[in-house]
Length: 264
Image 1 (cartoon, rainbow, N blue to C red):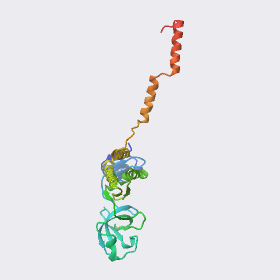
Image 2: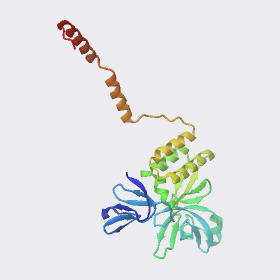
Image 3: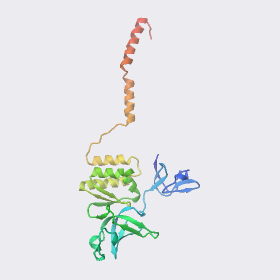
Image 4: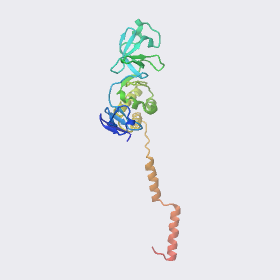
Protein backbone atom coordinates (compact mmCIF):
# COMPACT_ATOMS: atom_id res chain seq x y z
CA UNK A 1 0.00 0.00 0.00
CA UNK A 2 1.50 3.35 -1.08
CA UNK A 3 -0.34 5.52 1.50
CA UNK A 4 -1.48 5.10 5.08
CA UNK A 5 -2.58 7.19 8.06
CA UNK A 6 0.17 7.53 10.68
CA UNK A 7 0.70 9.17 14.07
CA UNK A 8 3.79 10.94 15.48
CA UNK A 9 6.52 8.45 16.39
CA UNK A 10 5.13 5.64 14.21
CA UNK A 11 7.79 3.43 12.61
CA UNK A 12 7.89 3.74 8.83
CA UNK A 13 11.06 2.16 7.46
CA UNK A 14 14.47 0.73 8.23
CA UNK A 15 16.03 2.63 5.31
CA UNK A 16 17.04 6.15 6.46
CA UNK A 17 17.93 7.14 2.90
CA UNK A 18 14.21 7.25 2.07
CA UNK A 19 13.33 9.81 4.78
CA UNK A 20 11.69 13.01 3.52
CA UNK A 21 9.35 15.74 4.83
CA UNK A 22 7.33 14.96 7.95
CA UNK A 23 9.74 12.26 9.15
CA UNK A 24 12.80 11.88 11.39
CA UNK A 25 15.55 9.29 11.66
CA UNK A 26 16.54 7.61 14.93
CA UNK A 27 18.92 4.65 15.32
CA UNK A 28 18.93 4.20 11.55
CA UNK A 29 15.13 3.92 11.33
CA UNK A 30 12.53 6.30 9.90
CA UNK A 31 9.60 7.54 12.02
CA UNK A 32 6.73 9.95 11.42
CA UNK A 33 7.14 13.35 13.05
CA UNK A 34 3.49 14.41 12.54
CA UNK A 35 0.01 12.95 12.32
CA UNK A 36 -0.87 12.67 8.67
CA UNK A 37 -0.89 10.59 5.51
CA UNK A 38 2.37 8.77 4.77
CA UNK A 39 3.34 8.31 1.14
CA UNK A 40 5.57 5.25 0.79
CA UNK A 41 6.26 5.52 -2.94
CA UNK A 42 9.90 6.20 -3.94
CA UNK A 43 10.57 8.24 -0.77
CA UNK A 44 8.82 8.37 2.60
CA UNK A 45 6.92 11.62 3.13
CA UNK A 46 4.18 12.43 5.64
CA UNK A 47 1.66 15.16 4.77
CA UNK A 48 0.22 16.56 8.01
CA UNK A 49 -3.56 16.54 8.41
CA UNK A 50 -3.43 20.03 9.90
CA UNK A 51 -0.98 22.83 10.51
CA UNK A 52 -0.20 26.48 9.78
CA UNK A 53 1.15 27.68 6.46
CA UNK A 54 4.88 28.49 6.50
CA UNK A 55 5.67 30.94 3.67
CA UNK A 56 8.48 30.34 1.16
CA UNK A 57 9.78 32.59 -1.63
CA UNK A 58 7.96 31.88 -4.87
CA UNK A 59 4.71 30.73 -3.24
CA UNK A 60 1.48 31.98 -4.78
CA UNK A 61 -0.98 32.87 -2.01
CA UNK A 62 -4.22 34.72 -1.39
CA UNK A 63 -3.91 37.47 1.19
CA UNK A 64 -6.38 39.76 2.95
CA UNK A 65 -5.40 43.37 3.68
CA UNK A 66 -5.39 43.99 7.45
CA UNK A 67 -3.99 47.49 7.60
CA UNK A 68 -2.90 50.34 5.36
CA UNK A 69 0.34 51.78 6.73
CA UNK A 70 2.80 54.31 5.37
CA UNK A 71 4.10 52.88 2.04
CA UNK A 72 2.98 49.33 2.98
CA UNK A 73 -0.15 47.25 3.05
CA UNK A 74 -0.04 44.75 5.93
CA UNK A 75 -1.52 41.50 4.68
CA UNK A 76 -2.89 38.41 6.42
CA UNK A 77 -1.47 35.42 4.52
CA UNK A 78 -2.95 32.80 6.87
CA UNK A 79 0.37 32.28 8.59
CA UNK A 80 1.81 33.12 12.02
CA UNK A 81 3.66 35.87 10.12
CA UNK A 82 2.16 38.85 8.29
CA UNK A 83 3.11 39.85 4.77
CA UNK A 84 4.17 43.32 3.67
CA UNK A 85 3.16 44.62 0.26
CA UNK A 86 5.22 47.72 -0.46
CA UNK A 87 3.69 50.45 -2.59
CA UNK A 88 6.42 49.88 -5.20
CA UNK A 89 5.19 46.27 -5.65
CA UNK A 90 1.78 47.43 -6.87
CA UNK A 91 1.54 47.05 -10.68
CA UNK A 92 1.15 50.80 -11.27
CA UNK A 93 2.68 53.90 -9.81
CA UNK A 94 0.59 55.39 -7.01
CA UNK A 95 1.14 57.92 -4.22
CA UNK A 96 1.02 57.04 -0.52
CA UNK A 97 -2.15 59.06 0.07
CA UNK A 98 -3.90 57.08 -2.67
CA UNK A 99 -3.16 53.63 -1.24
CA UNK A 100 -6.63 53.08 0.25
CA UNK A 101 -8.23 53.82 -3.13
CA UNK A 102 -6.49 50.81 -4.66
CA UNK A 103 -6.38 48.38 -1.73
CA UNK A 104 -8.26 48.85 1.51
CA UNK A 105 -8.76 46.85 4.70
CA UNK A 106 -10.66 43.63 3.96
CA UNK A 107 -9.68 43.45 0.29
CA UNK A 108 -8.34 40.12 -0.99
CA UNK A 109 -5.39 39.81 -3.35
CA UNK A 110 -3.68 37.11 -5.37
CA UNK A 111 -0.06 37.71 -4.47
CA UNK A 112 3.38 36.12 -4.52
CA UNK A 113 5.91 35.67 -1.72
CA UNK A 114 8.84 37.70 -3.04
CA UNK A 115 11.22 37.19 -0.14
CA UNK A 116 11.43 35.79 3.39
CA UNK A 117 14.39 36.86 5.53
CA UNK A 118 15.90 35.21 8.62
CA UNK A 119 13.60 37.23 10.90
CA UNK A 120 10.52 36.08 8.93
CA UNK A 121 9.93 39.46 7.37
CA UNK A 122 7.78 38.50 4.39
CA UNK A 123 7.78 40.69 1.29
CA UNK A 124 4.91 40.35 -1.19
CA UNK A 125 4.47 41.50 -4.77
CA UNK A 126 1.70 42.04 -7.32
CA UNK A 127 4.14 42.61 -10.18
CA UNK A 128 3.22 39.50 -12.13
CA UNK A 129 0.57 38.91 -14.79
CA UNK A 130 -0.98 36.12 -12.69
CA UNK A 131 -1.56 38.44 -9.73
CA UNK A 132 -4.21 41.06 -8.97
CA UNK A 133 -6.78 42.27 -6.44
CA UNK A 134 -9.85 40.02 -6.18
CA UNK A 135 -13.01 41.90 -7.11
CA UNK A 136 -15.41 39.04 -7.86
CA UNK A 137 -15.99 35.37 -7.13
CA UNK A 138 -15.56 33.58 -3.82
CA UNK A 139 -12.66 32.60 -1.59
CA UNK A 140 -12.78 29.28 0.26
CA UNK A 141 -10.25 28.00 2.80
CA UNK A 142 -8.81 24.51 3.22
CA UNK A 143 -6.02 23.12 5.37
CA UNK A 144 -2.74 24.24 3.73
CA UNK A 145 -1.30 20.72 3.84
CA UNK A 146 -4.17 19.52 1.62
CA UNK A 147 -3.24 21.87 -1.24
CA UNK A 148 -1.03 19.36 -3.15
CA UNK A 149 -3.90 16.83 -3.24
CA UNK A 150 -6.30 19.54 -4.39
CA UNK A 151 -3.97 20.41 -7.27
CA UNK A 152 -3.31 16.76 -8.12
CA UNK A 153 -0.44 15.14 -9.95
CA UNK A 154 0.60 17.44 -12.79
CA UNK A 155 -2.39 19.67 -11.99
CA UNK A 156 -4.83 16.89 -12.92
CA UNK A 157 -7.36 17.40 -10.10
CA UNK A 158 -7.65 21.17 -10.42
CA UNK A 159 -7.84 20.92 -14.22
CA UNK A 160 -10.73 18.47 -13.89
CA UNK A 161 -12.51 20.79 -11.41
CA UNK A 162 -12.17 23.75 -13.79
CA UNK A 163 -13.46 21.72 -16.71
CA UNK A 164 -16.45 20.18 -14.89
CA UNK A 165 -17.60 23.43 -13.22
CA UNK A 166 -16.67 25.95 -15.94
CA UNK A 167 -15.01 28.10 -13.28
CA UNK A 168 -11.74 29.97 -12.98
CA UNK A 169 -9.86 28.62 -9.95
CA UNK A 170 -6.69 30.02 -8.33
CA UNK A 171 -5.11 27.87 -5.62
CA UNK A 172 -2.99 29.63 -3.01
CA UNK A 173 -0.30 27.62 -1.24
CA UNK A 174 -1.68 29.01 2.03
CA UNK A 175 -4.92 27.06 1.55
CA UNK A 176 -7.07 29.90 0.23
CA UNK A 177 -8.72 29.16 -3.11
CA UNK A 178 -10.43 31.72 -5.36
CA UNK A 179 -13.34 30.51 -7.49
CA UNK A 180 -15.11 32.62 -10.14
CA UNK A 181 -17.88 31.70 -12.55
CA UNK A 182 -21.65 31.36 -12.66
CA UNK A 183 -23.33 30.89 -9.27
CA UNK A 184 -24.28 27.28 -9.91
CA UNK A 185 -20.75 26.41 -11.05
CA UNK A 186 -19.17 28.18 -8.08
CA UNK A 187 -21.48 26.35 -5.65
CA UNK A 188 -20.48 23.01 -7.15
CA UNK A 189 -16.77 23.87 -7.21
CA UNK A 190 -16.75 24.95 -3.56
CA UNK A 191 -18.58 21.79 -2.46
CA UNK A 192 -16.12 19.65 -4.44
CA UNK A 193 -13.12 21.48 -2.92
CA UNK A 194 -14.40 20.91 0.61
CA UNK A 195 -15.10 17.25 -0.21
CA UNK A 196 -11.51 16.85 -1.42
CA UNK A 197 -10.26 18.38 1.84
CA UNK A 198 -12.33 15.94 3.93
CA UNK A 199 -11.36 12.85 1.94
CA UNK A 200 -7.69 13.34 1.01
CA UNK A 201 -6.65 10.36 3.16
CA UNK A 202 -9.02 7.93 1.37
CA UNK A 203 -7.81 6.13 -1.75
CA UNK A 204 -9.63 6.55 -5.09
CA UNK A 205 -10.21 10.26 -4.49
CA UNK A 206 -10.09 11.39 -8.14
CA UNK A 207 -12.67 8.79 -9.18
CA UNK A 208 -15.01 9.78 -6.32
CA UNK A 209 -14.76 13.48 -7.09
CA UNK A 210 -15.40 12.87 -10.80
CA UNK A 211 -18.48 10.78 -9.94
CA UNK A 212 -19.67 13.41 -7.44
CA UNK A 213 -19.43 16.23 -10.00
CA UNK A 214 -21.20 14.28 -12.72
CA UNK A 215 -23.98 13.13 -10.38
CA UNK A 216 -24.52 16.69 -9.14
CA UNK A 217 -24.83 17.86 -12.74
CA UNK A 218 -27.26 15.04 -13.51
CA UNK A 219 -24.97 13.43 -16.06
CA UNK A 220 -25.26 9.72 -16.75
CA UNK A 221 -22.36 7.66 -15.43
CA UNK A 222 -21.40 4.73 -17.64
CA UNK A 223 -20.41 1.77 -15.50
CA UNK A 224 -17.67 -0.39 -16.96
CA UNK A 225 -16.78 -3.82 -15.72
CA UNK A 226 -13.15 -4.26 -14.75
CA UNK A 227 -11.00 -5.88 -17.44
CA UNK A 228 -10.40 -8.87 -15.15
CA UNK A 229 -14.14 -9.57 -14.87
CA UNK A 230 -14.66 -9.25 -18.63
CA UNK A 231 -11.79 -11.68 -19.23
CA UNK A 232 -13.20 -14.16 -16.72
CA UNK A 233 -16.62 -13.88 -18.40
CA UNK A 234 -15.17 -14.66 -21.80
CA UNK A 235 -13.18 -17.59 -20.45
CA UNK A 236 -16.25 -18.99 -18.67
CA UNK A 237 -18.34 -18.61 -21.81
CA UNK A 238 -15.69 -20.43 -23.83
CA UNK A 239 -15.73 -23.26 -21.28
CA UNK A 240 -19.51 -23.54 -21.37
CA UNK A 241 -19.89 -23.29 -25.15
CA UNK A 242 -17.71 -25.88 -26.94
CA UNK A 243 -16.35 -24.89 -30.32
CA UNK A 244 -17.79 -26.23 -33.60
CA UNK A 245 -14.65 -28.35 -34.05
CA UNK A 246 -15.06 -29.98 -30.63
CA UNK A 247 -18.75 -30.71 -31.38
CA UNK A 248 -17.88 -32.37 -34.70
CA UNK A 249 -15.15 -34.47 -33.06
CA UNK A 250 -17.60 -35.65 -30.41
CA UNK A 251 -20.14 -36.65 -33.11
CA UNK A 252 -17.53 -38.47 -35.21
CA UNK A 253 -16.19 -40.25 -32.15
CA UNK A 254 -19.67 -41.39 -31.19
CA UNK A 255 -20.40 -42.89 -34.67
CA UNK A 256 -17.06 -44.75 -34.78
CA UNK A 257 -17.65 -46.16 -31.29
CA UNK A 258 -21.04 -47.46 -32.37
CA UNK A 259 -19.64 -49.07 -35.60
CA UNK A 260 -16.66 -50.62 -33.83
CA UNK A 261 -18.73 -51.60 -30.79
CA UNK A 262 -16.51 -49.64 -28.39
CA UNK A 263 -18.83 -49.14 -25.42
CA UNK A 264 -17.66 -46.59 -22.88
